[in-house]
Image (tube, rainbow, N blue to C red; front, side, top):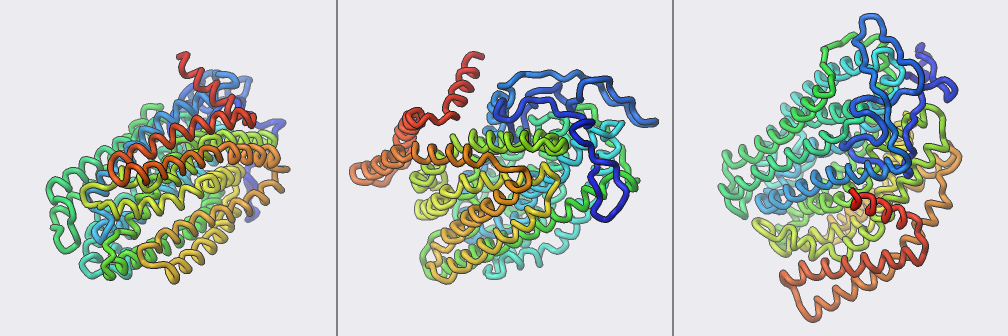
Length: 613
């Protein structure tokens, strides 16, 4: 279904709750959501739910749409589905984490590592923005509407979208590869000459991922609208395994401690081409998964009257958001690269540049991806349907329940990771080309990021509310405010902190930008939909933070004990996090019960249900 055009262009009318196709599934919180993977809880796989009544007849010449009955799993569907999806997401993230460890051991966090990560910056940010941003904000809501209201179930729209996007991605990728030298200069203007040449050489391979990243995002969106989520979680697992093999082979062939001065062209080719091959295979797996749902791509470029104009206008604001985020990444990368070169020139011999920042970010994202993304992925199609019907009570309920369920796990996790960030980072990364000092620097960055885990998650959930309403303009404007906060604090860190601590300051600014962003976003959404269940949400967050205080005290006690009586070494790196997290988790559960946190009962019932199976 197409909304009113701001340009006065004739558009099909927006359906109201009285005559639209209703989304009849259980509300989030009665059930649970998932990431780009898993199966939807309430419907036949591969089919978007229809309202009761006779099925629609296909348009003349349109391919028939399969008529499959909906099923209903009841009020526990969303929670059970989220648990299933969390397993897939966990596999993807854990193999991604293993990939990060192997890659760090192979290339380190000094000049070669920064050269690789800078070359990988553009495809990396496109991965976040296309799969988590543009597809979520524009494509999924758009396709959900078309599948609900087009007589052919949206088949023609999907063909046009797939064709036009594949051609656009091919053009963008070609231009990016040809402009590799200029792009690397934008992000690494302070590189040493050999480091610059190394990064450009790698970029010729890594920029080819733009095509496959974009295609993966579109394929994932098309699978999501069919309530097929599993492939989008498991395909990255294969990508991660391939990159692990490539990095392991590089380490075996080249050995640890390689620098831009000593690495060979053949070794760089292995690293660059192998990384790109992993993303290409991921896109192929997703295409096969989509084909297995019955979709057969028919190239079409007859865009007039297709409704894609609405999506493109919406995408225009998302592109502004993309540019703002890219600007933030550009600032972070340049400052981090410059600080690392200065640190090495001063003889500090600690890798604290963009490589360390990216490795810390991978660890930071792990709990968010397993817990919150598991809930967000199915939340968006549901919220899109509720917003399409102007059912703001359901949208508010979706947001509130998803946030509270996520926060129950993320609040204690954030403090646990912050306290044990350094031993965890040493345990994870101190091998191969990464020294203990390098790993400790990663831990310092991770500790700062972890304290921003809950604001980061809340902000991401608020963005999904805007996306469900088809609004990408407001997130773009809020993104400008985020960029201002992040940039100002990053420059202050660069000017005031020693080179080896600059990236810690940059990470602090990044996290604080989400705190300012969620404050603005919350006020805007609250006015639009009549509140965000703020009393309930804030009450839960307050009780969760009170419940975690005994765990924090226990964690500091464990750190003091290991520091005083055990000292640095494997026993501390393993024992302190293990003992601290077990003791902290038990104390948190007891405190949550005493404080009567309602999400505790929901979690216990979920675990009991899984154990009975």
